[in-house]
Image (cartoon, rainbow, N blue to C red):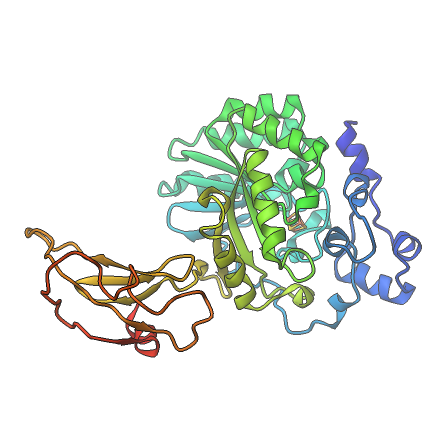
Length: 405
Ligand code: SF4
């Protein structure tokens, strides 16, 4: 047995352990065990610094999970979009391929609780119909292996799947969605990366949510993947009491870059049953992105998205930087709240020389804008007095909100 397998075996998982280690009332612990069993391996358990800290909140069952009756069992409607067992086909050219129900740790906020835990939740016997589907659908060029966590499979089993996928000519890219680099980095072994790199291009999407998860062990794991030519990106979830703070996020994203992991997505927490206590307001997320954009490298800033309930897919959410747009101009504010004008291109004619004296009146001017034009004198400084169509002396912010994209 490999070290990581032993560590999975040594995880905290029973009702007795929940009562003993975390002081959870026995009846509550039994209810939580029935709702979604615990699995906290010794490595991740060792990252807890004090009760209720951001690591604790992600892995230790909480009574609040049993009080949440509003959430959905399958908030992203993955099952509705599953043409055959183990496949979700939502986007035109890519498919999600569920390969195991097991994970190195069971995250309390998991969106896929209905699929994770008991081995019968995702059947390995039904992989054949999934392969057949992938073979038949030539529009699929990108397969995302997920679960559960595909790196819970043995090297032998994982290689069988990778080999089979590589025999399908239209599948160009294989992605492995795995939280192992974060929650059980001992899983990333030289043998594993040597095997994976035979099936390039293979990408890994991992899932760090807090800077304390970046340790010498997880650093080594991510570097081993990167050294094997496997690009690693990160999908984080915004969660109350875990990372709902711009400074924590800045530290997380900049540290990820240092271990060669690209911050890729930041998700609003899904409306998953039992996870309501993790949810924040959308404004919290927007404020975090606004506090990062411009203040740190764009490489460190992920796409902020809501995975739309009902299976709508990922929808990007941006703070409002475009204040006004018409056929001639785009009026924008930068990260400091200063106003700038970009002239739209006009086909087959040189860009008109225009002088656009913009005066933006911000109703709620709490972002540092001086309420004047780009250079502070109400003009874009390019000379002519020719005014664009729809020109207005003053743009009210309420009007901008209605007219801009
Ligand atoms: S590793 Fe992923 S699938 Fe497994 S419990 Fe955590 S979030 Fe859910």
